[in-house]
Amino acid sequence: MTLDELLKKITDRFGNRILKVYKKNERRAYVDIYPKDIVDLTKYVFNELGLRFNIASAVDDFDGFEILYHFALDAAGIIISIRAILKDKTDPHIDTITSVTRSAWWIEREIHELFGIGFNGNQDLRPLLLPDDWPKGIYPLRKSFVVPKRDSRKA
Amino acid sequence: MSHKATIPIGPYHPLQEEPEFYKLVVEGEKVVDVDVRIGYNHRGIEKISESKSFDQSIFIVERICGICSSSHPIACVQAIEDIGDIVVPERALHIRSIIQELERLHSHMLWVGLAGHFLGYNTVFMWGWKYRELICDIMETVTGNRQNYAMHKVGGVRRDIEKEHVPYILTRLDEFLHHLDMIKGSVLDDPVLHVRLKGVGVLTMEDAIGYSALGPTARASGVNIDVRRDHPYAAYDRVKWNVITQKEGDVFAKAVVRILEMYESVSIIRQCLDKMPAGPIDSNPKDIPPGEGIGNAEAPRGEVFHYVRSDGTNSPVRHKVRAPTYMNFPTFRQTVVGETVSDATIILAAIDPCYCCTERMLIVDSEDKEILSAQDLIRLSQEKTLKLKEKMRVK
Image (cartoon, rainbow over all chains, first blue to last red; front, top):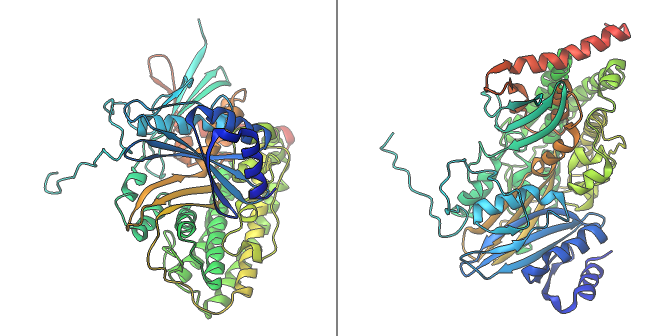
């Protein structure tokens, strides 16, 4: 399956639920979708097409958040990134994909604590990386978080 | 009254680099549940990278891991090259492959040694770490460093492999191969290890796919994936080699995959040295255009994944790093439940995470009082091997 065939399958299946398809080169493509469709899309590419879940990357876009779900088609050396754009900056939410693939177990916990994005339906959003006494409501990978300068003169 | 006890493992050990904390819930000898807590070594590298220039961020990711210090930079430079469609000279691609395979050799050798130690095969441990030095010597000759080689840069590599170094590398590899044959024979033909490791900690193919497991962990379960072949990078599509897979998914299969992979690595290095064309080693790209890029590479433990976004300035807007253990670790929950405590050490070691934790197991009762120490758990594992040996009448 080439990248064109893969993208055609996705657009045929989801039609106008796809916002934008951008083919960067023969091995990389980006598919923009509405956040509400992420579970259906994951079901399709992970379960039906058999793509491997690489990881998800969240990005702080100043006026919203993006979550890119990267999937690899190993038989053809392709990585497609499904981009869900969250417009709500104050209380961002998206449905969990852990019901589809267990491999998203840790990354949803990580995005939840580092970006403050909620995952509807995910019961296990305990902190993964930050210490237990990390203050609530402070999300270090948001652009608004500035790393405090250390004073080298103090011990 | 429940007879469940909790075994906290970790989080710190002075000898190892990545602290993690596991909680094994045991009922008698049997492990019934496991929970993992990572983050004791969270250094905020993704955040730091956003404040560095592209060249500096490669230095940062090189320091993520002391063992994969070629895989992270190579995935990172490939992600940046993907943004700007930067072309890398042919000679540099071959050098990248050579460095990657040398890294795989020393990492797998280190694993064989540690796995031997956990099982009470301390000779294997001594051998593994002794003969790993041969590879570290080659690394020092070629790059100037035993670890943290600083070889990869956007557009090429930093140092060339000199012509006069090639015969030295080849003789050292021959020497290594000779010892590898010995280790392969003593591990894979040992009847005690067959009994001890076969059928232990089985990861089925469905689970490996469901958890998106990577590298030797997936390949030992029959999942035929390898980034080097599937997403060709460096010079891997220019040389002939095989992807090693096994069907069983147990600890023994993982050992077989790692040991046989080392032969492939030696073969790749030899072919690359032979085919390496003359020419420049760096295309000196000047600036990185706005855009986003993805780079992946096959580290000794599986796929390393980097996502980098640029807005046209000198530093990345976002830099996501995913190490292979991140995907492999959750499979531990699948493989260890139902097994005995004495096998937990080797099952955990089989996915080749950082070992710090396995050496620091403690058994506590409900008042968190220590009743079984770290050394005791390794001793348990070693004693089980000894008992098997007596039963099988081998020394």
